[in-house]
Length: 139
Image (cartoon, rainbow, N blue to C red; front, side, top):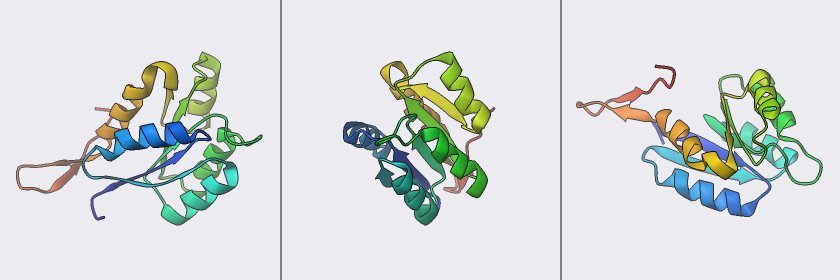
């Protein structure tokens, strides 16, 4: 899996896990390392698999919150990027997640493809020699 971008999905909806996971798995050099639906499952998945990117919903199973998962990531795995993908498109929610350390925030209803595209920009690019070059999304 050398050169592969590892992604985990944390969302309480099996439909979102399947559909967004299927979109991601079509991308070359990307490995979907697992899915979780609550805080405990997310922490276990993240700590064991150490993905490069965590796709995270705002609300999880039961009373669990995505913000708690984000805080775990920023404290324990600061090199990981978190992409919030939620039904809550409110500006205040977006700002709260970005201030707490999320790299990006997308509304599931209208920005599903943009979330996938943002992740695609993180993939290693292949040079003419076949060597991997990591894309910089800020350029």
